[in-house]
Image (cartoon, rainbow, N blue to C red; front, side, top):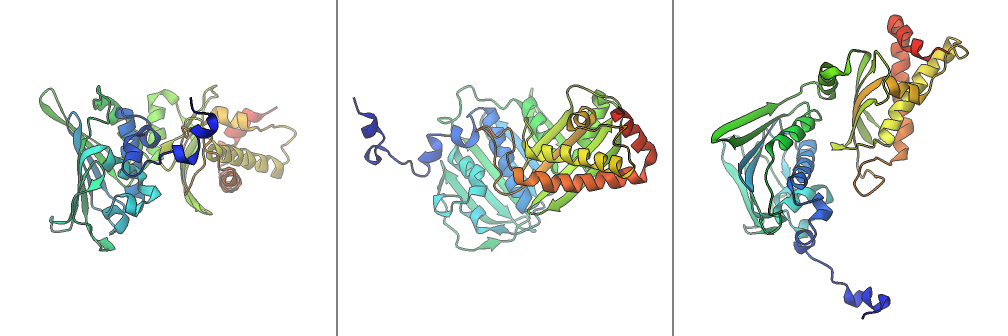
Length: 359
């Protein structure tokens, strides 16, 4: 038996190289080789392209058990070199999901189209390896990107299937985060073609509106925030419920990734709303009559927030909770000022809000 010292010596460790680093450990990159892993990979890839290139329409077509097509239409910016060469020699961390996509596919065929509906560049990958000529051009102008893929059956689970209802659900939630883009999904069902389109032109505001119609009830002080603070951007929609509940409705995201345990971005919002109400109490000498707390705010809050930032930190390996404490104060300051100014202008709604905190 090897001793512990020998077992972990440099001589006994084999570093996996491209593309085996991904093919032998796909779970490290996409979570699992089920449809859940595919959706996680696909959503992160869409985030990368939509954030940098901007596309007004995305189409996902499920063709058979393990193949499909992705189309990004009306691309508004040029395609840079790192999108043209998706291999280890041109590694870019922000493109790791699409690089994993090429590696975990038996074939991955990406084409770039110009305004004349003619392809200006075609790249073919097989199990992550580029099979067409490598371009040296730094960027190209194109209006559409099409990806035809066939997943590698030796990698993906034997019982892999698309589970269209789940994919539609995830696509709908993703669409709330990109109000300037429509998303279409196509797939066959019982021998017939089915397609659905999701486009929420008001973004997270639409998400809250739908949840209210689903039974959350009315709200007031409805507010939308879209701003860049320091080196991150924030999109926030919130309102106060007509009644208190034990389980608040708060949906939080970081770079489009759902954070079910919330984290520092939500902490910043709760502190900001609390500070805003407290500032009103202090100005109008109401601190002896009213008592405000973050918990009290949370009980009547309904909110959806998406933070876009570079290199977010998470607590835990599953990225359920944002841990960037440096964003708490900037968010809190921005939200507190916004709410205080609204309270000063809208007295009827303000009285309705502060009544809940009367001692």
